[in-house]
Length: 371
Image (cartoon, rainbow, N blue to C red):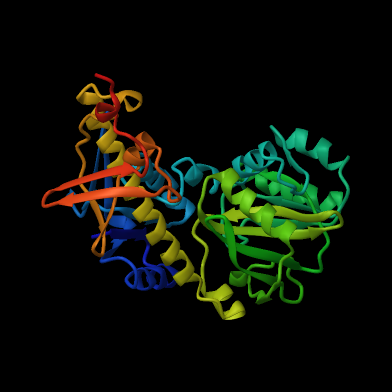
């Protein structure tokens, strides 16, 4: 049985994903993030849900806003060795902080608009005198386009800066890329872009966010744009997420990543069942993770018995068997030791409770020894 859970605030998109996952997993639970607790002890973590230990799963997909970033990172860190999770723990901190996101994208050489960070309001005002207008000013935290401001002159930027200084919050200054209020969102699942759309802001609005009233339409992205979206997701540390881009004069520029993208807008625009793509991918990776865990466990048993892979030929390997219907799939460690491939012809001797496989034409060592 392959079991999964979706940790979220219970949004419509999360409910869609849970419903889709039930087509592939034997059991799927919707876990309310508000009822989670994390106990951190020396070399030990405990996750409680509603006061009781969280159930064991093969796959957990964590979704939530920046308000829950620390909790989601803690849960992911505690469970990452035992459960497949599509978002790496540090991504919950990086992806919910625009500054950290841009630093990661810069390290990975992902194209993005030029971004500035100043240490004080006075330093920022000096910077504002040297930049080209218009510009974008935004808080490191925030979603759905909130906390994003547009300034078309030094005077307007300076006034915004005075207001931001009162709030005593850090902020970013970013070059404005003229696109006519249009941006592109790509949904990345694994190493593929499964859906993409262009969003056009409403009249008088610079933010092309669906939550800000923007309209979406399907977009056919070129291979280079898809590649950049996938690389951006990988740079942040997520197997599933949304990448928002602007079309610059020299190609796409990544402006934001989203760890918990809404699916309503892009599903409506593209007519693609994004939730099903996500569910199918999670099931595939959960099965692979579970299989890898069994192989690792078998190797651990071998080491405890003093059996090294290089010397393991002819020695016992303790492992369970993986059945696919009426067929037996041998553990990976067995094929590594024997060196057998699908092209080899083999002689198979099968008795009740016993199986012997030899490569056809090879003389067993004990029979080939000269007396």
